[in-house]
Picture 1 (cartoon, rainbow, N blue to C red):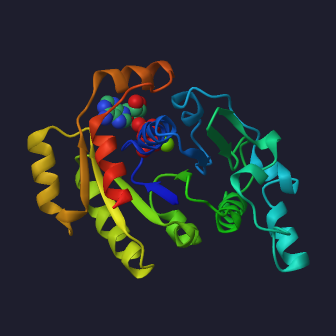
Picture 2 (cartoon, rainbow, N blue to C red):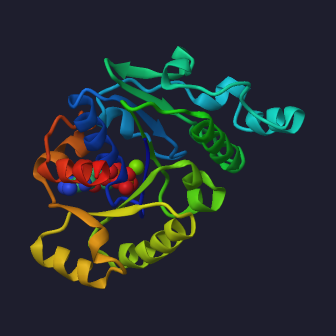
Length: 245
Ligand SMILES: Nc1ncnc2c1ncn2[C@@H]1O[C@H](COP(=O)(O)OP(=O)(O)O)[C@@H](O)[C@H]1O
Ligand SMILES: [Mg+2]
């Protein structure tokens, strides 16, 4: 199963990715987190792992996958399982693995399109078994939809913080998920009861709300200190239950 996590900047995508990944790890699933955000570095810390080498280096740089595609008409010679991903691009802890597509490192180095393409080809090429869960953490907004990454996911999970911007973005995400015929679920994050009620009332599909995660001091402090999120949140189990169904 492949889950894509999306939402506006700062809404809690990476936090949700880490909490979900750790919860699936506790369940004994074989978990791969794919960091496809080309700007932010927090996720590996939230997972308590080392920063993996950029996967774009597998192709010799961020434009490499384009060159391979232009030459051969495809990017990977064969389908990969999680265990086929070259070890040098993975960090991990037991049944939890992390890979990062690539980060923008220098001023004026050019756009992140090559990274988006690499992420899309990788996700398309990955085959998941019964026990595998791939969680893709994305950059803010909906560019990954534009790039076509979401086509290769089984579930789209949108994190919504209590803001007008998130509510508006949720309409776009909902419509694009529908157009791709993918199930979409919403997590209301950093919301108290009143904020959750107002947000939910404004959403296109209230049934798509699978969990409400309140603003939590422990999450916030871990985020500030760059510490691993070794916190069990009941709402995350509700998300897993709904996805399982
Ligand atoms: N439920 C929550 N309670 C408190 N702080 C949160 C919560 N969710 C996220 N945060 C904090 O909000 C900030 C942004 O979260 P992050 O997951 O990095 O967002 P995104 O990946 O969407 O940009 C981080 O400092 C994180 O610790
Ligand atoms: Mg993030």
